[in-house]
Image (cartoon, rainbow, N blue to C red; front, side, top):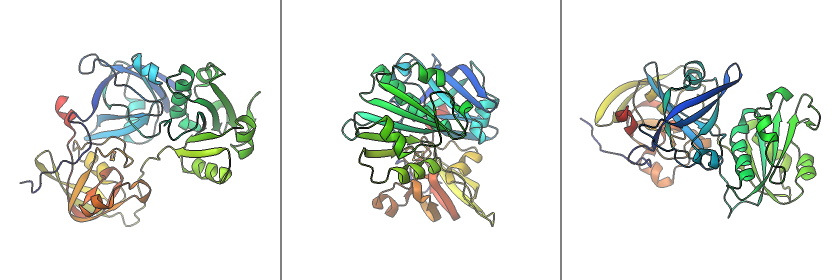
Length: 356
Ligand code: FES
């Protein structure tokens, strides 16, 4: 019998779910494809609104696992209003590989509503936004550039799109078609760029040459890019504030290969599942086929809020956003927490599982 009734998830009662049909898939390179999604017209009649910079979480059954991952949207608020979300998926990991290799036009997939904190805030941010995109990190900044161009967000934008090789400039035709009075795109390629582009990496000198007024900087592209931007712009008078897109939570090193037993209370049932010390509690639950609720996967949204009843867990420091009260109450986010011993936990159930 379940010892504790607990559901502190911040998700709405329906789990915030939508059902999307794949309208079109465009392959950029082998292993990198852009998906255009629309409402399935049955369970979802109309897409939920999107802010520029939002993500959606997709969920699918892959083998015995029920897996959720978050994908940034390249679509703009007006494109979402017009009936499509656009997202680019790189083949890596269980769900992305499933999407790239198995999913085809016409298939329906479960998704969250658009969400996320990587969005413009008129009270906090400058009217001039500088985007710094590293490689595939272009998607959320493309969304912001489109929003600036169509006027659904109130800022002007200068976008530095940084890659290693010039052939990696995804969506170049889309970016080049944006109106120049609202959006300027600067292409920067490390190994030599084409005509009208910059060769090298993003620098303070480039920022001053192309921007020259107070700005807010949004960067998306991973830790190495964020460390470089932070070093390069330390104390720079032009930059009022910076915002970096959250990195994914990854497996951690565990040389001993430890595997623990987790007793999981979920949806009124109790499950005993194995959990590797190297993987998050959420990944262990998914691997066991449990319909555990998650969305952002980076400790941000609170949808997966769970409670530990006994045992030891460790939160990933870079993603641990819990209050001291939550910690004292045994609340944790399985999406960014690793097991350190056998443990007994209570997790929220994904209500969309019952709709399928
Ligand atoms: S899925 Fe968002 S906090 Fe865990």
